[in-house]
Image 1 (cartoon, rainbow over the protein chains, first blue to last red):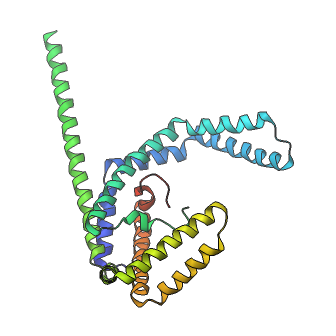
Image 2: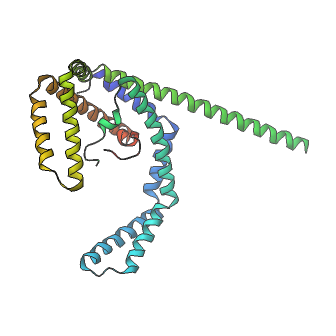
Image 3: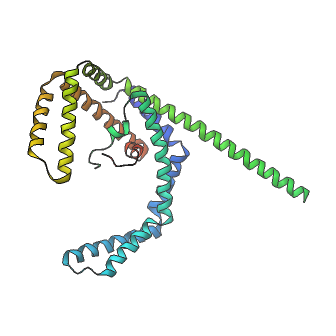
Length: 122
Length: 150
């Protein structure tokens, strides 16, 4: 169990991170990415097309048209401005987090992120 | 036109000042967050889990035999992992790995080293979980440079 000092330092680090513009931009981009109506419709269409794809693939009745439809919908999702905005914001924030992780490494000689990453990530 | 030029120039100067203030604030925030990261690291450094691990590392560093055994074990572990990911294991390599594993686990200094390493890793994972709850995203996953998680 972390000590009070450790919990305090963790909270102070978390608060400091949350006050950063890059982190605020990430939260805003994530909110827009998750709530954009057009993108939600796109996601639903993709999920539906992917289901049909899997069913027809299993049944051996998959058509070229269905393959192209899944590809097109996937591209629409990936290239949607809200997706691009979200990924760029995440990238910008990740650079800051990597810099913080480097600071931790310089003090401890340990790669915090590599050790603390949730299990089952591979 | 003169008045307009002055207005435009003033607006430009205001904009430059505003940008400068923003940059200074961002730089200040960055310094602060990096210092907070160092503070967090220092607090980890003071924990019993980190100290125990450091002590165990120090003991291994002084013992050439233990160090060689550990290196051999880690290499065998990596070989077995690689072979498994390619096409299932080779019995000779697996047998060699099991033998080294048994030796390592029976070696008091190495056993202590591995136990303290596991204790420290558990604590860091727990801290990352708390960070995730506070932040709303996974710090470790995003702070790990690209190139896969393994």
